[in-house]
Each structure stands twice: as structure tokens, then as C-alpha cells.
Length: 585
Image (cartoon, rainbow, N blue to C red; front, side, top):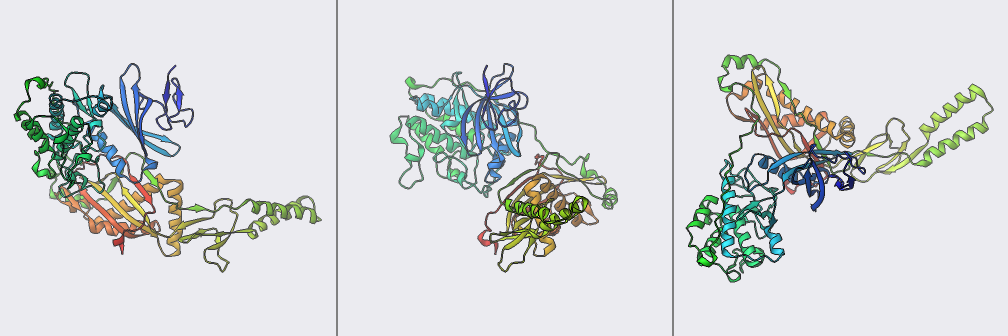
């Protein structure tokens, strides 16, 4: 009997089991796929080899543990790759087979199942001693450019951003090549720079990509660097010139002048000096002089181009909001705005110590039991009188026997403390039965909140509310606020999803209040209406009701949209104790 690996803890399990014997996580993903080997592991991410049950073929399963993430960026890339691959169909691209989440003891693990393309990567071939000719390199370049041409034909173009030998597979069929690993894929263009993290592989990513400004020509640089790697058997990063700008590969390869010049065009440091896209690069490749007949490349098989995926969006549900008459809008303005939140449970990651319990040490209970035992010996009473006296003594000892706790700087006691000492931060606590004494931090906490779109309905009007907040908060200075913050911190610690839902309810409710009597009618016929002033007021009001106040806002966005392209069905809340930025004041 073969064994399956647990997708969560990687423990081996008998094939017939439905759950992992170690962690109780499901062994069959989506009712179809099982794990049989570990291919790679890096931090919170794993790449696993699997099989489709009932005679299905091999698959690749990528998993991402949300509890181990340093921030949301890795999850954003993971889900972007799922969304892009789901809409593609091409023989040179792995097919999307499924995705979902695994819950294991409070830990959430996202998974993504792809087709496992047969063959070996160019990197594996090089490691096995494979040698390349110009003819074969031309075939590979043309096949990769054909795939890139399909990706770049979408609007906006799809960028792979990680072309390198380990991400190109040579299929068993003659002249067949595929691109894999869409982990860094991007389907929007940010000409002014939109990434805060450098993405790509050293030697294969051009400068504009590392600066967050990837364009279609960026993938051409990755292809050029890959050609250099297979023809020279050296890393492109090791072939940079003295200035570190150009890849000086000519002394290390043996190809025709025309082909070398074409590769140099792909590796131009400035994106504007490369071919603008894959179609232009492919045309230049075909117009370049052919190599000698002895090294003429085999004819490449042209995979059929995929059809474009249908555009996905959540629409506002109106037959056409442009057809709403002014009379309908005035009538709707007087009605209450109803809100429809996401259907999925929130995802919350807490990386900071929040509500800290201070339970009584064992000696407290032993002391009280000793007092009770001594009372039994000393009291002359018996029967019910003795029972009543002992009960009174037990209750009194609970009030009198206390234990000291010293809080670290920056924390404060808001439940169960008796500050009857002269030492700052020292409290005398008594044992509590229904709740434990707790303290909370007073220094600012960092919150990265990415809620799913909220549907707003008012009469005949419908809009989508999109929010994004990145800020630092702290407990309010007043006693009521700090006690309320304590309860909020406890909820974030013990029931994080409930706390995330409360955050949504408070902020959205305050925003709806800010829309005033005109409500959704104030948006008029505009496709997008920004609400920066309303968000500031709503944020302060919502946080205040949770006992918090904002310290610094790094980024914020509140928009009313007729339709939304954000298809996420869950709120995401990230909490940690990172320091305030230098410009926070």
C-alpha cells in the first residue's frame, strides 16, 4: 500500500486514511488530489508533487502557510498567480486544476494545484551535462516568445517576471517548451512604480523590474539571460561588464553574429532600447540571418494560441446605472443604506503580543488551602456552622491572598490589578475564577487591513465600497478607552476572526453614516468616487468605539465603485509591533 503525505505537516499516512494521523488535516485536496513527494520548501511556501486520484496524472501542489508570513505580499502574489493561471489555456502553460484552504488547529494553509508538465527544466539539463547549439537555442527562443506573445496579448498584458532556466521545461515532444512557475506573475502595469519589494532573480531580472516598473520588455531580458545561461553554462550575473550594466557574453558562446546581436538586443539595460514586446522580438529573430546549414534548427511546432479569458468583475446588479432617472435617485436617497459583506471568514495574522494573562502561581492556591486546613483544626464548631464559617474563610482568603506582578515597560494592567505599591509597573493581583488578570501594550500597533469589497444597497442604487488601510493605532488615553481596548486586544488574541468582523462593522458603519442623507445618490453617474475625508472621520469614529486611536496612517483608500475587479471573498487583517516610520512625527 502506498503512502500519502499530509499537505499541512508532511507526515506519512496510509493511503486509505482521509485525515492525517498526526495533525488531523485532510489528506485529499478538493476531493481529487493527494501529495506523494516534497519538491521544494522555502519559509512558509512549499512545492509538492501529487497525483490526481482515480487514474489521474501527476500534479504540482503549491502551499502557503498564512501563519508564517512576514506580510501580505507573499499571499498577494500567490493569489494573483492563481487568478491569472485560472484564466489561461495554452499547451506551453501549466493548466490550473484547483485551489482552496486547509484549516489546522487555527492555522490556515492556502493551496494551489497545477498540471505537472512532463519533461525536465533547462537547469536540470545543464546540471546533467547537456550541451546547447545555436539551432536548438533558436527553437527554444521562438517557442518561449510564442508563449509570451499570447500572455502579452491580453489587456493589460500578463508579465511572468521570473524567466530563467529552472522555469522553462523542455517537453518530450520535439521542439516543445513550456514556461512554469507563475509565482511572480503580474497582470497590471505600473509605469510609475507600484511594487515596494524587489521581485525577480539576480542576473535574470532587469533594473526596471527590480524598481517595481516591469513592462513586457522585462520578460525579454529574462529570455536573453536564459539563452546566455544555456549557451555559456555560466550565470549571467557572473558575466556583467566592469560597470555592472551589460552582460558581456560573447567571449563565452559560439553563435552566429546575427544571433548574438539579437540576444544583445534583449539584454539592453534600458527597456526602451529592447524590442517593445514578444511579437517584435519574434519578428526580429526570424529576420535575423539563419546559421549555417549544419546547425540549422529543427522546425518548431506552433502551439495553438489560447482564447482570452472572459473578464471577471463583480457588477453592481443594475440593468444599467446610467438608466436610473433623477427621480429614482431622489427617492432612493431617503432610504437606509444596506450593507452586504463578504461570504468567507476573515483571515487574521497576529504577530504581536496583545492581551497577556497573568494567572496566579501555585503557591496562592496552596496558601489558601493551608488557611482552610488550619481553620478546620482551630474552630470549635461542627456541622452546618462549620461549613458556613469555612466558606466565609475561603472567600475572604481569595480577597486577601494576592501575588505580585511586574509589567514590562510599555504595558499596563487593566483587569484584576490593585496598584497598592510604590513601584511603577508593580501590581498585587488576586486569583480570579471567571477571568484572568490581563495587561495590554500601550505602544502603537501596526495594522494592514485589506477587506473584501462591501456591496451597498439603497433603494434602486447599488455600489461597491472598496477599502484599504495601513496604519498604526494605540489604546485611547482615557480609562474607558483603555478598558475597551483591552477587550478588543483579548478578542484579537482569542477570537481573531470575530475581532476582524467587528473592525469591518465599525468602519463600514461609520462610513455609511458619513455618506449622509444623500447616500449613494451623491456618487451620481461617476464610475469611481473617492471618499478620503469621509474615511478619516469614519476611521476615528470606528476606532474610538473599539477604545483605539490612530497614531499614523501610512496608506488609505476608500472608494465607491459601480463595479469592482476585486474578486476576493474574505477580509485580511495583519497585526504586528513594527516601529513607526521615521516620518511619522
